[in-house]
Length: 263
Image (cartoon, rainbow, N blue to C red; front, top):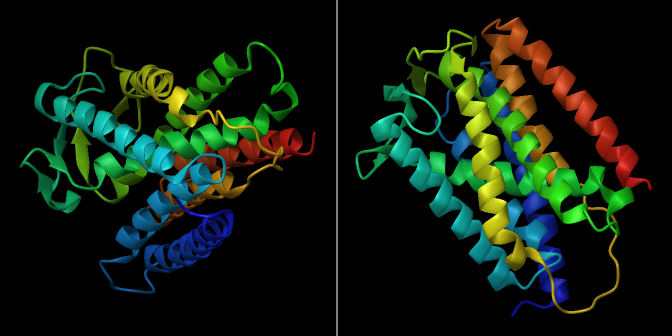
């Protein structure tokens, strides 16, 4: 068991490392570096940061367990999709995606799930802070977190498929896409996130009484940091539609999160 002081130290160390990794990844994004590791370091710091944010409210074992469960479930569904095209839609993995787990799925994809879902839940907690004592708060939290996770994916897809060429989306029966990504991908993110949070939320409820804590902005920082990186990559590639959408999503979410946190 980690003491409160050790948890606080872990929280601030991961926050600093995440910020530093984001800065380095952005510098690389604009062509100032020719390195392979900044995105890996950023993903590792973001995963550690998601554990740290959960550990502020939960025993560290619960925080790690939730992170592993989301990684396994999300990665398992992504692997299923790589084989069958369901539930997110058919795509072909590109050479830039890196090494594959079991020769099926890029190794980084499972780790994106806890970052997206846990940070989205943290942002949703900020937005819904004025309603945290209502009877429907839990349902609102899961629903809003699912929408925010889908928005995170919405900003990520142009970066992944059009900028980095991690994968290439294949046509579906529905002609409407978001820069190549089928709309079923984002709808599936909402459904899958709801199911994952419905399963893991009991582990994220602290059964022991404790003093009320102030708002935690670290999840917002992780969530916005990802969108900032995605938007920067799209700006370099001159995908201005994605850049504009990323900016609108980031600004609107920040306004609602800060407003809720000040309640």
